Length: 282
Image 1 (cartoon, rainbow, N blue to C red):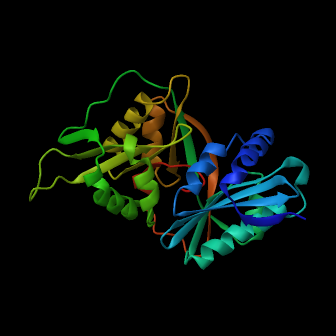
Image 2 (image 1 turned 180 degrees about the vertical axis):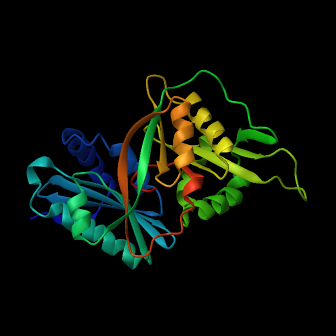
Image 3 (image 1 turned 90 degrees about the vertical axis):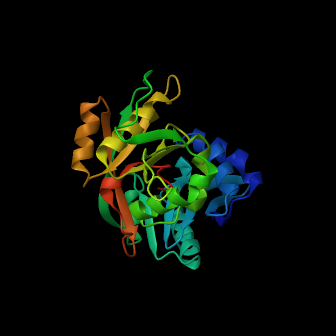
């Protein structure tokens, strides 16, 4: 019987080895980042000396995210996936997260159904080839790098879009981030129109209220996609106009994933969300 416990740095090599061998991709770097952040609660299931399962909880104020639920192939079907998902759920509940959110795969969906999660909407994933051209800012806007003085405005816009407090994620990935703001200041301050914060594996958290601004940020995301890699965007079902715009600009509609919720659904402004940090933390 596997023992469920908090992950430690000593587990990282085993986590990377088992997730890669199990066809889940080497998640060592992901969990190393998670262990360094105060908002993350990574867990493992251990059987003997072997990592048998992983899971992650992320605390975003009143909302918590569950992700990276993995069980080594030969130990599946024994209830370990349900057990580690339930353990992460309990940790997040103890942290005061009333709303629990996750993105489901076909393999994990039966577990989440069993635990009472319900489908609230779908993420429509698009992939884009890297581009050489640096996009220009829309009329009346400035496109520039994120600086430390922008953090409060970015967090406020992000809360408005997601209904969550993703402070730690924003601070972690702001170093390579870009934003759009009004060219003209009002009372000495320019209005923030949107931002793009690139993360690992070709993802980027992209938030913008106006589709024209979002397209600019998505073009920027493609411009900085790694050579030989791809840029990813994720729009919710309700953002019909956004999906039409991406298709018209050569983004490839890849597949959809259910967004599932346990407890009250955070107040999401679906038309403002154009990309995710990742599917484990939103």
